[in-house]
Image (tube, rainbow, N blue to C red; front, side, top):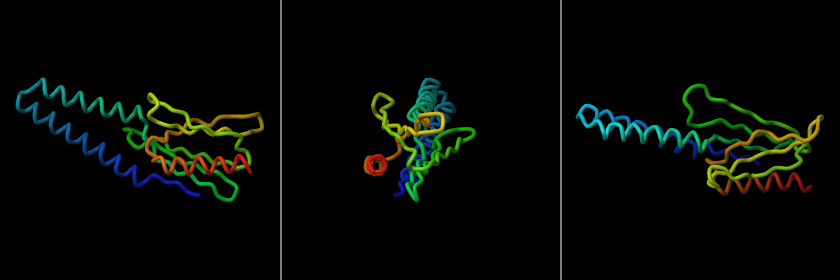
Length: 150
């Protein structure tokens, strides 16, 4: 089973960058027209939208269960500077538990995988499923549940 949210990510990324360019051009137009207050408001909206995208943490997510392995690849979509590409891969039989936790005032779900290691039980860092639609999230949930209750 493979889940990939690349199509939705493209739309989110385009929307963010088009909105950013639009607000930057509006701010620039207000600046040249001498409307300082509206210029500051436009720049403020641009900054708030950027911070909102950072706070929600939209991520590209690739999830696969194949040949007894769980593979989870993810990286933040809207991030200036260096992107942090992450990859989690482990044998499916070491999965002990998983959970979807709500974050950002209950609006976003994060996936946390719990695995058995040589040192005991450990949690992987959470992966934001903000950009994963409900249908795909349920597929991931069912695949992980099937692995746990074999």
